[in-house]
Structure formats: structure tokens, C-alpha cells
View 1: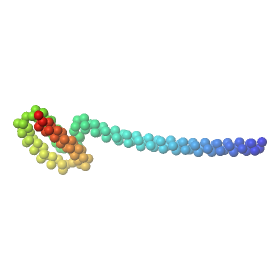
View 2: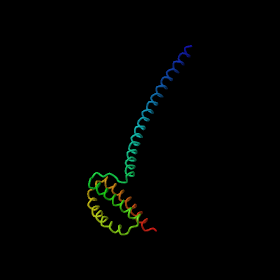
View 3: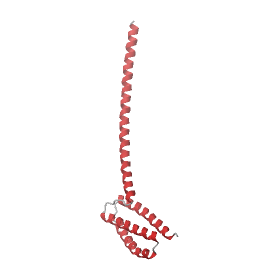
View 4: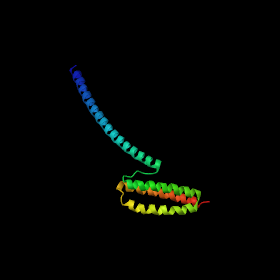
Length: 146
């Protein structure tokens, strides 16, 4: 009987020790899950902000710049592109010739603007001007097609 009692007691201690270790492991795993979830949430929020900014830019086609002079230039360039598109669609070569002076003026202003760009704005500027150049090329191509 004594052996049975000692055996049961030893089994009970092992069970308690095993349960405590399992509880500690479960607690550690839960903490790790919380950390990973927080990191994932932060990354998702950052990505959502980037996507929102990209959607905003794509929706109106004009990025926002920190320098008001740069923003003013970009808005003027958007007006120029709209006018260019309209003339290209109508294939009015006379109106197109009149538009060249405005293009020259904007090109001169672009050189002044380039010196005012912050690092972040410089990247936006490059992306915007690349996309705008492609649009202008498409408009010109449409104008020359019969």
C-alpha cells in the first residue's frame, strides 16, 4: 500500500510539473502571437496608408507637393495637358501651334521648380512627369493617326 501511495504521489507531482511547463509554454506562445499580430497590424496600416496615397494620386492624377510653387506648376501643367489632349483629339494643327508657347513657358518654369524639390517631392515629381510624358506621347500619337 505504501508503494502505491508513493507511486500515486510521484505521478501527481509529475502531472503538476508537466502542467506548469505546458502552461508556461502556452503563455509564451500567446505572447509571441500578440507580438506578431501587433507587427502585422502596423505593417498593414502602413501599407493601407501607402495605398490610400497612391489611390488619391491616381484618382485625381496630381500628387500633392509640400511647396506651393511646385503644386501651382503641376496644376498649370495639368491644364496644359488637358488643352493638349483636346487639341490632339480635334487634330487642329493651328491651335496646336499656338500651344507651343505655353509649353515653352512651362519648360522654363520646370527648371526653376526642380531646385525647390525636397527628396520626397523629387520622387513624386519624377513619377508624375514620367506618367505625364507618356500621356503626352499617347495624345501626340492619336493626333497623327488617321
